Image 1: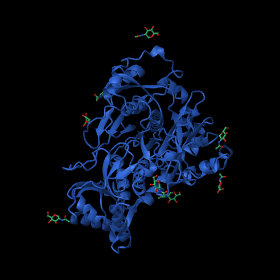
Image 2: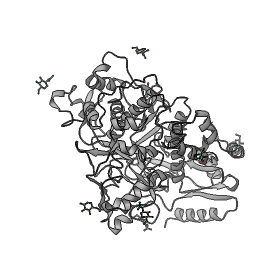
Image 3: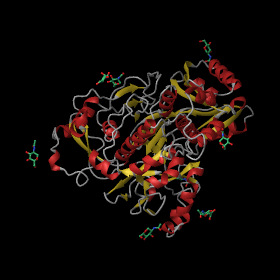
Image 4: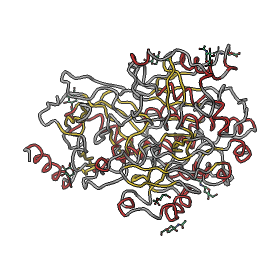
Length: 596
Ligand SMILES: *[C@@H]1O[C@H](CO)[C@@H](O)[C@H](O)[C@H]1NC(C)=O
Ligand SMILES: *[C@@H]1O[C@H](CO)[C@@H](O)[C@H](O)[C@H]1NC(C)=O
Ligand SMILES: *[C@@H]1O[C@H](CO)[C@@H](O)[C@H](O)[C@H]1NC(C)=O
Ligand SMILES: *[C@@H]1O[C@H](CO)[C@@H](O)[C@H](O)[C@H]1NC(C)=O
Ligand SMILES: *[C@@H]1O[C@H](CO)[C@@H](O)[C@H](O)[C@H]1NC(C)=O
Ligand SMILES: *[C@@H]1O[C@H](CO)[C@@H](O)[C@H](O)[C@H]1NC(C)=O
Ligand SMILES: *[C@@H]1O[C@H](CO)[C@@H](O)[C@H](O)[C@H]1NC(C)=O
Ligand SMILES: *[C@@H]1O[C@H](CO)[C@@H](O)[C@H](O)[C@H]1NC(C)=O
């Protein structure tokens, strides 16, 4: 064993028995795929960007309110909370605020920035201060496959008086996989398109080469599949708005959207319709290899035009202090969900539905941080926002069993759930393929969370599946590879298989996967919101309690196909909820009467 490692474990043991500080989080070893660079010199004055999450005593009340607001048989259904109400319920105690403010000041924190409700604070701290505050040692870790380097620790502690008040400090023990971290498509197909390749594509598509719902999934096909008819939205004043989330420096081009609209939405020609763009963390260097942002915005509007749409781009780390040593991480690898959530919670009129095609393996996201992000989605739900996430395109886990390994130190064989799809406060959207009938697809992300318990709204549906005949041949190995009590996903699935065209720069691109399914679903949710607003009712908000109860009658069950992964037989689609297709997909006309 290397002397440094030995020193490290003695040090950790010492922390555990220290009277003044308590271990807050600790990993048994560097997660698989990562190694600490033992000889890297981390300059003590190097700035670390840290985010501190404070305990929110009002959250359980918010959770209870959300349960009532989103339950269609409750008298409070649709009584969404205001910005001020959510802020009040997110506030830490005054005592906690004072303690944390004092703690940061004593350690010379700079660029201190509190969120609007003061539930989190970001600050820049020199490495030596952060090490003192958290009784730890930071090191440089390398992701072996990508060569990406980050400054992290395997364990950190809190002074005893702060323990009840701090929920998480990020990114201390967070080791996201920079290669997996990303789109619903998880960089599988032609996600990363070299631009030389792109230039060879035809500029225009000859539409007569394709037949709707036979060789292409286009807006008329989506209308047919989901029984949307020629429904046209009427509420276009901004009270109904589609939000498209963008991360990883990926850009959505208004010029590309225009080309898409010209081809598919004849009414848009000559209009001044365009999407609004908000750079939440400021301008950034655009990643011009990924088409994700264009795909997401174009498919989100395909049946929802002319509902207003905003592309929210949340990128790199805000205050970044570069160091002389090239020892640290590059901007852009931190997890920006909380910046996005804070921004939206600060709006008087947030978008009414948000589509997101990004995710990480749940086990690479520290649990306390995942919890805070998931609480953020609950708050947005309470504001009346429907949050849709793709489940990714890796089925129950990447193909081969040897890669389906728990990070918990025991190397247990396991399926690999994806976060935020695994958060009970989002609607997670899987992918179907085939038309008339649609079937489940083996690669559509699915699973059972290890972090979040099964929420009551899906308990009956999921336990019926697990106890039922569709799952009766499961092997003992498969049965040991998931958390039977965990939050199960997807909730619904939408068309993602088949060819979808979208514009990337000024050329056609061909896409699919859950990255296509989730914006398509979000556009239809926007139509339901339009229908409710037209009838003087508030927007749908958090969808799941409705979908698993009154909404069931407006969904078309998918009973064919299966999902697998990790070389296991996987799960079969069947009548009712199943991990292969969730509850199925929308029948818009039936849902119209059910949502009023
Ligand atoms: C939610 O509804 C239940 C039943 O109607 C009620 O008893 C409870 O007080 C409500 N919760 C909140 C936080 O208002
Ligand atoms: C904080 O800054 C002051 C003044 O620059 C300095 O004297 C002090 O040593 C610093 N304290 C810590 C904990 O870094
Ligand atoms: C499109 O294809 C049809 C049939 O294949 C052909 O007649 C037509 O000329 C093509 N149009 C263009 C603009 O290439
Ligand atoms: C777009 O056109 C409509 C009327 O056609 C007008 O009311 C609106 O202000 C225009 N919007 C912009 C951004 O120019
Ligand atoms: C957002 O950032 C992009 C990329 O840096 C830039 O092209 C664009 O002008 C910015 N937009 C706004 C409104 O700041
Ligand atoms: C887990 O696997 C890693 C990498 O193969 C190995 O270094 C480690 O010793 C294993 N841990 C256990 C508890 O088997
Ligand atoms: C499924 O089985 C579990 C344990 O065997 C039981 O507690 C639960 O009630 C059953 N659920 C249904 C819907 O049959
Ligand atoms: C799924 O269905 C197939 C074909 O009917 C069957 O062979 C398999 O055992 C089923 N899987 C489970 C887990 O029950």
